[in-house]
Length: 351
Image (cartoon, rainbow, N blue to C red; front, side, top):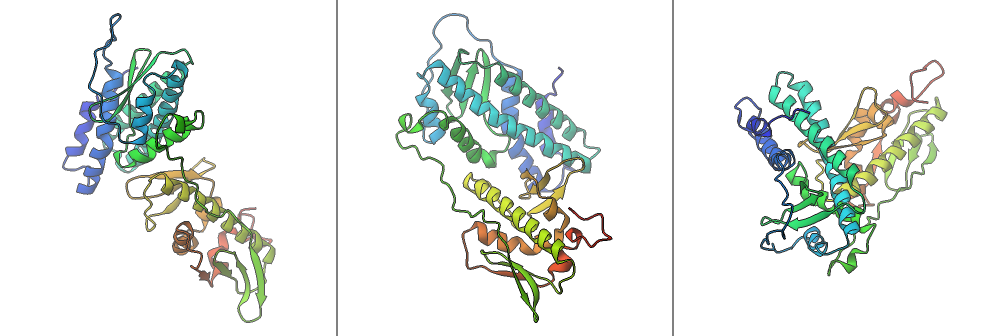
């Protein structure tokens, strides 16, 4: 396979026509760790066949993942192999996500050859990482080392890999996911003196809805956590019940996902939060921030009720933040949920 020269790709950050200064600054932060990884993988140094490896000065392991890497230096071979698989699995996920983001951006900048080459390079590196991960067995020789800049390096049967995410801003969340994956297999409190297991958030997944019927306000659908949808009349009440249940279910699904992301250190721009339908895909793309961060979730009802979702974002933010006193009443729920409400002659609504 012919690989793109990543040094040429990195020049994209300095082009005058690459967009705003914020965009260029973000791309530099995104490309620099990828450049290091691609160079390390595509141009590996030969491994000495004999003789002890040269000793390197030990870096001070301050982060938990560095403490774990230091503890694995003399660990059994199978344990180091499991750590390598955990780290590379998270790298593959992040690089595939970066390639997807670059492909979406290339649809807007169709003449940007550098962006297309960057996409190809990231795809190629993700494929190489996948091949390396698939080759690891409990007997595969793995070395885990910490560099002078506190970066973690793996030597997997002679193949060097620098453990890093393509997005420097999300490095801490990336490292936590590796820790979570590995520490599900081994008791990390035996390996790290002050191991802190991931905290679970007390976010509710209660999706029950309650209906009330008032001659003055009309029928209303409410939840136990402060959300209320008011309808004008009883027309197609069965469809309105189903629509309300779908909206509440999906809001809870999204709220739980965002709670997990926040615990991992991800940034959420609530004003930017949006849901996009992807042609031919069963899941929707949830845009989290202006840096291209996103996740995929099955949210078909919310994706069809764009205005409703915009209005309900403040309530969702308060719910995720653990503010049960926040209440939101939407008085025009019938029009907001219109794409989901199916009168007998409407065959296009969601069943």
